[in-house]
Length: 293
Length: 333
Image 1 (cartoon, rainbow over the protein chains, first blue to last red):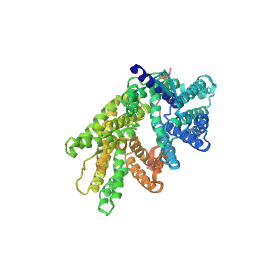
Image 2: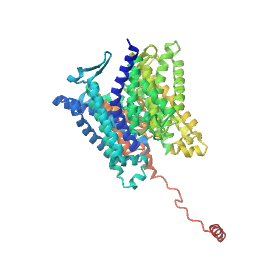
Image 3: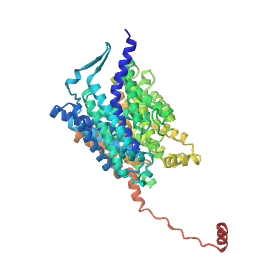
Image 4: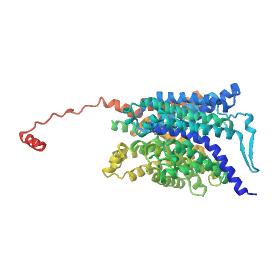
C-alpha cells in the first residue's frame, strides 16, 4: 500500500545521499574551473588516488575510512598543489586546448600507475557499519554508511562554501575568477591562490574518494565516471559556481536514482549526458548558477 | 617547407604500398595497418582540431557509427561495401547533428559537449542489446575475401593518402583559409564575413566521413565489435593525441604522430605489459610542456630560421616631399 508514494520517496532519498558525494566532487571541480578556467580532466584520477590511499591505510591499520578521510584530503591537497606548480603553471596563458590535453595525460599516467602498482582487480573493503540500516516507518530504509558520508560531505561542502565566500583566500580566488588581469594589480598573488585553489579542489576529490570507498568498489579506472559526472555538474551549476555545482550534484543524484528506479541502472549515465547536452544547448550559463558561460 | 612535407609524405606513402611484398608476419602488418588507420583518423581530426582549432574529443562517435553502420546495415542483408557507405552517411548525419549543437559553444564547453555526445552514443549502443548486441557485441562482415590483412593494410595506406591529399587541398583553398581564420580569431573572422558556423560544420562533416570509413575498416578487421571498443573515449583521445603529437594544424603532423605514437605504444606494450597506456600519458605531458606545436610544428619552426631571409628585411623610410609635409602639418592643425 502507498507504494506509489514510498518507492519514489526512497529513490529520492537514495539520490540525495549519493548526490551529497557528487556535490563534493563537483564543488572541487567548480572551484578549479572558476579560479583558473581549467577543465581538470585529472579530477577523476585524483578521486581514484584518494580511494587507493584510503584503501592502503585501511588495509594497514584497519581504521574506518570515516575516521581517516582527512588523510586523503591532505595527500590530494599536496598532489594538486604540486600539479599546479609543476605542470599547469608553466603553460599558463596557453590555449585551453593544451590544459585539457595536459590534465588528460596526467589522468592517464595516474590511472596506469595505479594499475601497475595495485593491478586491475576490483577491491572492496568491509566495515561493520555497512550492514546497518536505519528504518524510517515501514517502507523507508537508509543504509548507515551512506548517511554518514552524506553528513560528512554536507559539512565539508558548507565548509568549502564558507572558505570561498568568507575568507581572504576566498575573496582573492573570486577576484581572480572575476578578472584575472585586474586581480594581480590589486596585490593578489595569482600563482599562490590558484595553486591553493587547485589543491583544495583536488582535496575535495580525494575526500570524496575516501568516502566512496566503503560503499563502492575500487579499480584503477573508477575515477572516469566521476570525472564525467563532475563535468555535468559543473555545467549544470553554471561553470565556476560552487554553490551551483553543489545543488547540481544533489539534483544529479536524484535524477540518476529515479532513472535507475524506472528505466534501469544502465541508463543513469546516459540521462546525465542528455541533461548535460540539453543544458549546454539551451542555457549554457547553467541552471543554478548566475555566472556567464 | 610545405612542398618538402608533401614530398616526404608522398614518397613515404608510395614506399608503404610496397611493404606487404616483403615477407612480413600478419601481426606486423596488423600493427602497420593501425599506424596508417590512426594517421588517417588524425588527418581527419586535424581538419577540425588543427586547422579550425576546435578541440573535438568525441571523434569516437563517428568512428563507432561507421563501425556499427557496417555491422547493422549488413545484418539487414545489404552488401558489405554498400553498408560501409551507408555507415559513413550515418556518421556524417550524426556529425551534422552534433556539430549543429556543439559548434555554438566555444573552448572547453565545445570539448565537453563532444565528449557527451560520444558517451551518449556509447551508452545507447551498450543498452540496446536487441539492436546492437550490447556488451555481447555484434559480428562485422569481412570486407576483403582474399589475402585479408594485406588488403586492410593497403586500404589503410590509401585512406591516409586520400586524407592527406584532401588536407593538402583544403589547406590551400579558400575554405582552408576560412578555417584557419576561425582558429586564429573567430570574432574577427565573423566580422570580415566568414560564415563560421557553416565552415566549421563542413570541416566536421568531411572529418566525420573519413573517421566513419576508418571505423568501418577497423571493425571489419576485427570481425567483431563491442561499444566499449569502438565508441570508447580512448579512441577519441588517441585520435586527438596522434594529431597533437605530430603537430595540430600541420599537413603531415598526424602521419608523423601516428608513426611515433603507435610504434612507441607497440614497443612499450612488450616492456610494460598491461600499463603500456602510461606512455600515452607521458607523451602527452611532454608534448604539451616542451613542444606545444607538436613534432612537425616544432621542427618546421626551427628550420624556418635557416630559410633565406627576404631581400629587404627593413624597409627604408621613403623620403618625405615638402608637399606631403605641409599636408601632414595641415591635418595636425
